[in-house]
Length: 563
Image 1: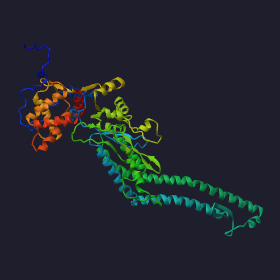
Image 2 (image 1 turned 180 degrees about the vertical axis):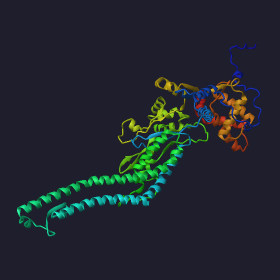
Image 3 (image 1 turned 90 degrees about the vertical axis):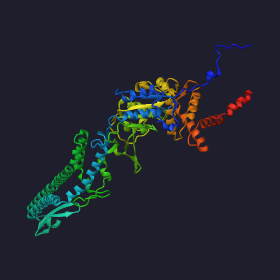
């Protein structure tokens, strides 16, 4: 009697995967180009492209999927392809604020101009280090300075001589003492003693006392006029220095002004530099550790690194090339708060922490400004204050630079307040689905800032979505990137069967590229041990069996228990 089959019975043949016929018309995967495109991830790729191309704010992208699905590689590939056709991002520099030194000024420059400005400013200072001392050594300066000194000395000596002559005529002696001048009567070119003075007649003594009072008053007037005359003397010297410095600075700075005539911010900065250079021309005449000695300044050699010249430096924050390389695509592997928004460094001097605008360092947001920034959400969330700093920059559209200590009021060191840099960047966060759903539920700012989700599929339907040939191309690409030998056709078929097995579905192939790459590397190891030129199906089979054997101790013990 034949047993009647139950129509709902599941046969073993129905569980066995069946590979599609055709599509594998190659001998080795080395013949394939290995670029199937975004196989199975078209939905996620479209979301990433929209985020990269849209000009509307807050359309940042969150890429969610399982680790090993190729999220990082595909996202960066799409961004790089789009970025090369986008405009080159501009340069940014920080320069000294001569009016408020603790608030450095940020200047936007055309791509490729930041390093040129820095080089021209260094050349400017070095040129002035030679030109200004030469001006102060010139015969014209020496003559004019000597005239000023002689006029000052002559005027003072003339007035003093008149006072001494008047005193001699009036019979009054003027004597210099350590504390000033003293006055006494004079007869026959001899100073009267107190006894001789007392022996004079009353009328003569009264006349001499009146003469002494008059000479003393006149001497006092002459001495009181000395500070005013010295002030006028200093003004004339400063005016002379100003004229000479103006002549040298105007000539030297003209080349820089002509090179950046179209940049209003740079022209304002150069005008401030011009005024400061003219007002402090003596800086080029005193070397490090030297002091001005004598009536004339002492020239020094040119050294741009001397401390007095630091304020004329240009701190290049971002320097993009002008060769049409496109917008930047930056991936920050360690997204700490400082690595994202930049930092202000300090140096220890005499037990005190000091800083200046040249010690401002850029962050990933500065480098990616005008382009794209790729971050791993797990790393961002694990760094203190990094997530909060990233959100604040995206929300305000600018990059303020501050330290965690300042934010939490843990330090009171005098610091800088640099101008915030305007921000225009598209951020691509890459994480798992759990991260996306937790942030959506717990952070009210998240969905406002990351409006696009690029959901990576874990697998794809074999017959409809992934022809065997396309999947073979993907395997060829994995082998090439992993640096393994090529696979023959039978090995690719075995990889397809193992891919179906990984999903637990006879009709769906896995998109976990990490697991497939690990399998290829182990099979390549087996092929190397056997000395074969390519990977065959037997090597894939051995790699699978060995992997199961390594992890099979618990399973074998379980089977023993069942038996």
